[in-house]
Image 1 (cartoon, rainbow over the protein chains, first blue to last red):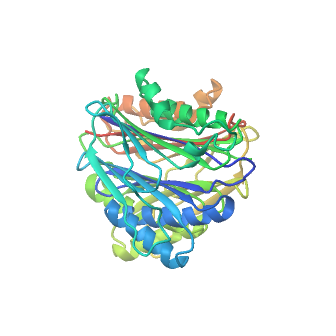
Image 2 (cartoon, helix red, strand yellow):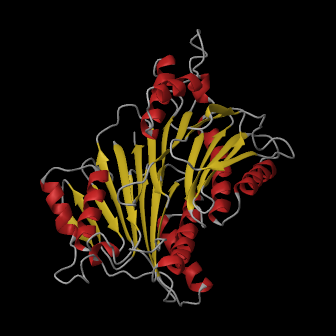
Length: 236
Length: 236
């Protein structure tokens, strides 16, 4: 199998810096984890918050700490460091090559969208709250086997709030993904870019909030067994 | 400008695990750093070494420590932790969006290949040694402006040792890149994959060592200003 991930990430319009932070780390027992945090408010102060939360989580994941414990520690750290006054969402998406499972950790009101060949499309939407503001906050953890055809979409709430201020309606990423699955689209890059582009269109290309979309898609075996990483970093 | 990075990474033939570690981290003042470490020997023991070195470096870079200090600290840590008995190469390639410069840190006998529109093709090949075995080891640091058309190739020594045991000759990544530049190839993905494929061909598809290739290429402005990340993780 070839587990593929794609991330697309934009800042709020006219904001130099996104308040979202996305980091990736190799898991010491095999596999990788992607951590996505969305700090309260936007711009520089939000960035400082999401950066601290994501950094604490990946630092622990890199040392072999399990996902749930890393998420709790990131909460405890932010809560202590900022006196319970600022919040951040935190999602961890891990592909563990030892257990051959995905592990999804949510500290985020926004759901995670899953598609599997067996179960079809469904949401991970158990009530879940951000880290940093309540004394005890734990993540909602979901684990299931890595199987060809599975698609996972994780996003920060800028995606579903797109369009909310321009009037008519909010963007609905679930129906966006449903349409692509009906069209047999499985490329995580195409899925992430389409969800982002559709949301941006509702805001006339001027997003009202930072938007980050993370998509995983499991393909059949790769040709040469190489690991690959591609990064695009726009500089103004 | 759009700074693009591509990594391709394979394990030694019949080895489950690559002894090379590649990690990426966001720089707190803007930009990203990619860290590539190649641990002594191969397989599990090499992985444990390169993992410790890369993890220490990115942990410090994530906290805003400058590249040279992070490389020295990674050395000190490995030297202390393993009593000077094991070595690892360490390269850090950073795109700093505040200074608009690339910062390249080498603790590696293997050179780094650079192409700029002004200077053409040249090597960073000042004598440089691996971290972990000598009491005092410092990185060779090179910094220059990020400009459209610049290409940077960083690799672990498996790339240039490809072919060395099959007889005739070693792989020469410099002439490989020279050819691609003559053909106006600027895609970092194509460059990384071509260098890897050519080296693998010399070893008849059975690499004698772990091979990692990291390529950066600076393109004109991107369309939508989005940051993008793509990962392919083969699972056996």
